Length: 378
Image 1: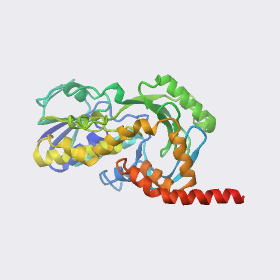
Image 2 (image 1 turned 135 degrees about the vertical axis):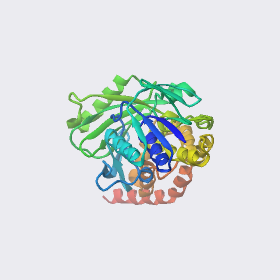
Image 3 (image 1 turned 180 degrees about the vertical axis):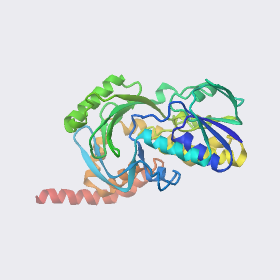
Image 4 (image 1 turned 90 degrees about the vertical axis):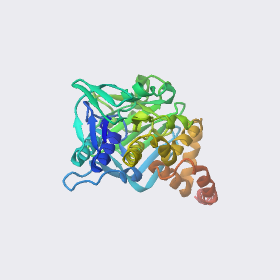
């Protein structure tokens, strides 16, 4: 089987690794690789489990962090001790590391820009035409493969992310943006800090987002202000609450993974895990049947319903006052902090979130009573 993969980010490289290891002919096309992105670069435990094993002489280029500070934007804050560390990496370094795993497994990387694809397996670059049994779009939010074989992700399902990279250090921090349905972040990487902000694409201009981010950073972390550093911006696509948006991400001889398939959490914007998992699911479908046609249902059954539930909850999560109340409750209750910590880690899904919160209520009431009694005594 010959598979042409457009894009050598996490999804494309992991897919190529699995296919090459199984004896398929996998060719990655990416002329811009590696490049940086204004994202946190966090890999949770479930994302780390999907990565290829790291060679002794080429360890994963990441920093491990086990605490996260959440801020409401209206004065409330809470410190979470994470049950499992988050690995934080530069996307340039992570993507390059994953590409090395793919080529070491036998995949081929052509540093060529793809200019056209077709449903019959033909792919055209600046050097000529190539023929494949299957073409995969792993080429990000603005995917050429998606635009050519399906349709672009609608603007209503896009978030804008922008930021810069600063020298120095800082704790992992996420601050919510009242009235903007988004958040800003500090993610400490091995040798710098990723500073960023994201909100729905239509919420406000990118320049306004960056100005708001600079205002947040100036208050508590002035040493991390850009000071001439280059700003980055890109869009983050996510699914709607309808299952049809996931069922359409493959045809008889083509498929989409990661951001090209709009597989990012609609609430958090986290997409690395879904890029990796979609690549794994597509590899399983291709190796088992030689066709991607079973991939959409496998995706829906595996992690798709969590994404659909997140799309349903998005407006309620960012409704006025919700994050403030959430952090106030968490400050008073270890049970609520553990739920939030698992949400940050991706260990707690949205489908079972309501049930877990209900189970945490008795402990929350007890913790609140103890906190009140302590404040009265003092």
